Image (cartoon, rainbow, N blue to C red):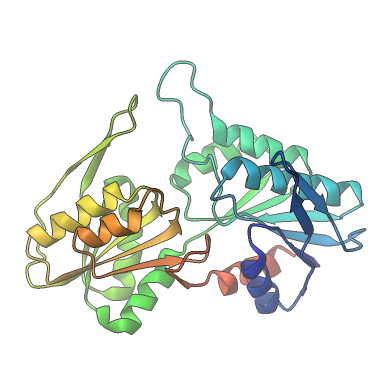
Length: 296
């Protein structure tokens, strides 16, 4: 078994390789002036089980293309099996058609990975696990989804947040708050988010919760622009929460999301290293390494 860390996940690839006790061979990469990627595999991959580590954000089109080029190249050179570790899988939020004529991009991405030789795909906290499983049925690709929320909750518990209330800003992701509450033991709940399918804008219905004088943490799979998270933080503060912290698996942080969340009253922001940011204080390396060794 051999790990190839892609250009988007150099540091994470090294952490995973160390945790799994396998060799890490970073690929050679550079960008041409027009933005195209040059990729070269610097290891003998023939008859090897190859683990490719490559997150796909930011710049999802570029990062996804790099992943596809890597997997096709190791397939061409005789890899026995290919496992792609894609902590943040771009285009996975478009997992169903809301309007006539919409592209089902998650299905497209699965097909592309499959066509370049990927046998196993390891992802973290997808936006809709049920849709992932449904679309997986149409492919030979095997999906392995890891839950990162317990790691985030463990981190906050070690920082004095035991018995904090766990909240999801969307009832569709209440599973995250429930998973966190099993570690923090402070109860859980969810607000309700409504998204306009044409504009993408969201509004939030703030449910009454028993959080007066309590610490609270908002857990979500993705923070993109920070609007939803900021509304959730403000909602908890308005209901009398003593303090509010924020945690997510995938920190996209577009357009000043961090500042927006902090202005709403969050006292801290926590993320995993699925995407490297200054807030990525929790690593997924041990969890991914364990799954890799199970697959092998």
